[in-house]
Amino acid sequence: MAVNHSPAGRPEERSLRIAMVVPPWLSVPPPGYGGLEQVVAGLVDALCGQGHEVTLFGAGDDHGTAAHGFVSTVPEVQYERLGESLPELAHLARVNRLITAADFDVIHDHTTIGPLVAGRRAVPTVATVHGNPVGEYGEVLSDIDSGVALVAISHTQRRLNTDLPWAGTVHNALDIHGFPRKTRPGTGPVLWLARFSPDKGPEVAIRACREAGVPLLLAGKCNEPAERRYYEQVVAPLVDENVTVVLNAGRAETLRMLVDARCLIMPIQWEEPFGMVMLEAMATGTPVVALNRGAVPELVRPGLTGLVCDRPEELAAAVLAAERLDPNDCVAHVAENFSVERMADGYAAIFRRFAADRYDIRESARMPAR
Image 1 (cartoon, rainbow, N blue to C red):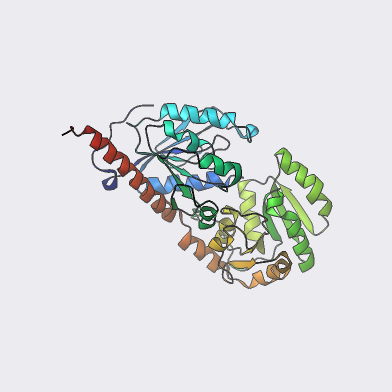
Image 2: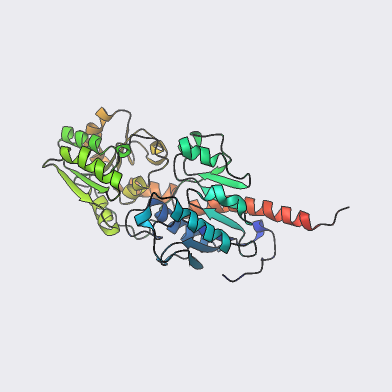
């Protein structure tokens, strides 16, 4: 790529040149499933709208963001190899060869392995942690270079590992402009929308809706081997005439299901670091009924945009009570607290701080010794 001359002035006083690095699995924005990619698409557009120059590094073709440039490290997205380590490592090796200090002020990395290889870069890296920073992933993050700054996507996630070098917390966000929305409470089925995994609790959703006597729509991602096994062995035997199953829905179909739903049910069984589907539901005016795990309390306002339950036994009553909530309150909550502009402001502040640190180090090195 062409080398640009470094702009004059301190990073705090001008727009920034940002290298946005995403994993090679999906396009940005994604055609269907892909919460990370959806978040990045909104962030890129918002940062560009603020006057920053963003170059997006990914795989496959440019699917249309406001980025000033799109750099593909491989002709096709690597979705079929999701779960392997080499595609992401090769992608990052190519990215690291392409990025130079003359071109960028900061790198924003959204990959899993990126923080571990960021010490080789001539440009400071801010890395967003999209998973839970514990176990093996926590070990990887604890071994990163001291010049890499980590950003949490929720306070809950950050509290799971307080020893990591966190630079801040920035909630994920959603661009709701043009989003379809309901104007009155939904009368359709309860919607469960997630990947088929025991972490997401689809069998808990089935039991709750059966007890409440309301229909349930299970709309799940089900194309990886573990997902297919779990669906066939655990979920499918529980499906009856009151449960409809939709597998691997596209973006347009997913939004239609959210608008039509009486509520979204989130019976999560793990400490979910965020949960973009909750924002999407509320943005359409659909309230969220969820178990009190992970970042749920940070996203849902009980009694206004949903109901938060401490025990699975409370879910049945909650899905019936959710129809009393005002769809307009749900939409307003997302617009006020989870806008892409607010997310961009949070990241820009972190970027400027780290770009300024690099600027000061470079300028100090230029000064003659006394």
